[in-house]
Image (cartoon, rainbow over all chains, first blue to last red):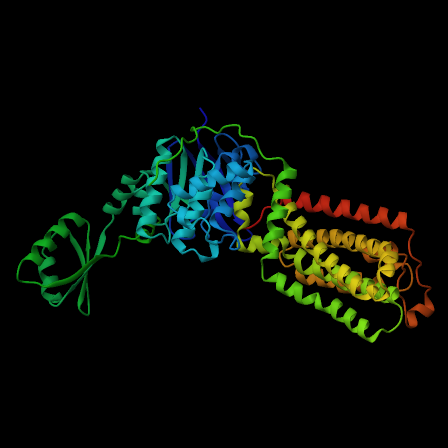
Length: 305
Length: 274
């Protein structure tokens, strides 16, 4: 059976720059997340999938078809690019209507669908506003509206939550889930793990143009949990706290800095419980605690070692 | 979140793609309108003051006959300067600006053919340039020729039409050519300026047979004008006579066909780094 997405030894380079390097994967999930830090190749991969670019090497297939110059496949695509540039001289309604007309809808029907799409992203009150006057979050929603207005079969969303306000985020997440429930296939990229977790449990993990892992988010979480965590503690009694923590087996390393202590542990859950107990007591005043490893960069550093 | 409309199935449908001519016209109309509302139009409106200022000056000074002065303005200013300069200014950036802005991604991920979308952008520039030239031409004509009264205007109308057609032909061919520069090259402006000033504007007025290799020679030939060769070179080489109207028209049509075929071919196949 034809998979939604199939990549065979796909590489893409721009001059001397390698954007993607020998990606092999096959996916048939409803929502697929592309996860990776900036420059990982997420946008390049999406551009190959939506036919904006051709692979330098290898084969890209979406629903078994090659996307480059494939008008039939594009008729069923909704694409939300990463950049925020729009046709500033148009209103939101004119913009979405125009793009619907390029999908083959007549002017009246296109306008009707555009109104409906703007309503779905709760921008109907701003439909006559020039795009140049819209805030960053509203522009994201206009981009989303143009992607879903023609009721596509598949969506490619490049960092759709970046720069969105909390309302926009929850709207977008809910909309994507609704569409997925209706059978729309979605590929969504992000460099923030918890953003993707809100949308899907299936991800492709990219780093420097290479596919590091494919599978459920839980596996990525496990990888995070498996590798030693670094936790920064701000405390007035760092020396004394360090001496106390050194007695625990799961504390692997301690680093002292002025007014702070960095602890490396391979059992973060137990460590957090211990700190909670210590903070509740009278011996130590812990002013702040933060994980230095929550960001993806740290996971990637660990994974590519 | 509002309730959604029934959506698509999991597998692609066979939706009809819009016809290419519909897309081309839709894009051309839209960008013509956007161009009219852009800041560029202020520059263009200000530029109109050049021919209109000269015509107003002539009108008040009343120096010589109206028709020859109108021809001077039409050929030396509108055809040789603006019909070359405006397509250079607007044509090179017709598609290039959108590639740099990346707004073109919205158009290229639609089932409308790339040729029609990018071709529509070029056509929109042809419309802007032609409109500007025609407004300049008609206003100059009215300012200059109306000095002789209504009878003079009616008598000179065929002259206006002939010049207007040549300007539109020039707008079509030069806009196509400079858009092609913009489509093909990453930094097209320098080469386009060298071509416009160094080749079209200069070589078309040299004595000898070289002007035959310029587009301007054939445009001027449609008005019955040959190269305006002057100076020492013209003593050594005889100036070229104007080409016959049929030859000039045939050459211009052939150049248009080649240029626009290349525009559509490149537009459809080139991959842009977006």
